[in-house]
Length: 428
Image 1 (spheres, rainbow, N blue to C red):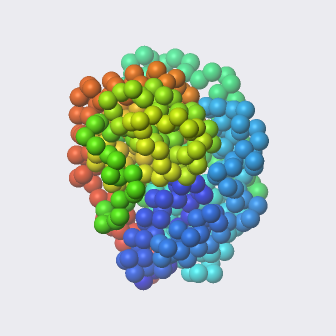
Image 2 (cartoon, helix red, strand yellow):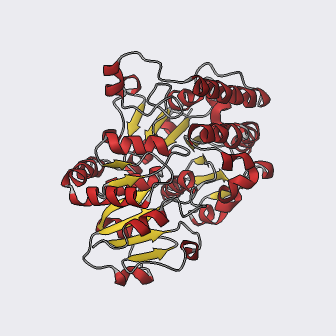
Image 3 (tube, rainbow, N blue to C red):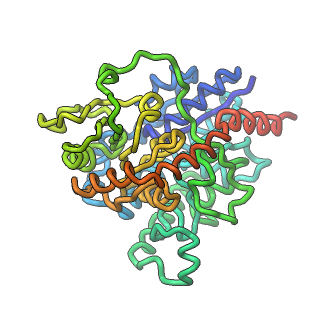
């Protein structure tokens, strides 16, 4: 039995895959600790792992980010992402690093397993392999690397198209300044942690410095990146186990009409009028059945006029509903998109915040759906895109191809295998 330390940024999209990993490793007989925010203590303990809290001053509630960072509400797109990278991801590095080192020493940790949004691991990644324990990285959002195709590195243009257009000034001066400002914020945080400045973009270090990098997707959903061949291993999504469970109360209301699931996820759902309301209004008279999930918000926020073809609920168990879905309408959460594709479900995506623009671009590039290129689409835009995806077989065909590719992968087996390999490398 080994002692394995997990660490995750305290938002559902980052934590949920790590909870699945925790359950896997506990089942393998390992002692598992997980460093995370207090909101996720219950889930971590239920997984069988030992909960270790963040420092209180760095334990932000993802449901109320505007309270922690008031300026966030005034920003969108790349500017909003820059703020998140500086304040939510870079600033906690010294405290997270200190906590990691203390846990590694006190609990005699054999392996560190983190998701690629947990930048508190950067000081350890800067050490040589002989100076630190092995580090396994799990990719829970689109592959980010310092090229014009990666998160925060330019206009979202597929590589083959960009190459065919030749060398053009892809980045405007404002974006270049934002990039430099974000990179400096990481160097400042690292200096506070007693670590040297980065010799490469912070995203690159998270990809190339770990002992192994496992991406929770398939190669067909990612751009062809020859420079990362042999660096990233695609292992497919970590889908919830198919358990025999009692269907939710609304399950019996589903019929033979094409099912359209609509979700704003769990982070960007403060204003349900961004996506759920337009979808509900635009498709109210269609021969479709709408299943709208508020991601934990009060369904009453959508108002009293729920159309006859709509069901509104706080949560939708994707493992139960996706096999029946004709399309998923989403703001681009990476986990939700991967789950849909694993079931061969095409997508309509409206999202530009966080990493969602990158997800939406890949949805369109891979041919599995439509990118609406905005956070707040009109009812007409949503309805037009949904009808197109439902009635044109090419989107379902492409989604099924990726489902077949994912079906040949086994994320849990790949993680267990990599853990075994890395633990063996530490045996003296």
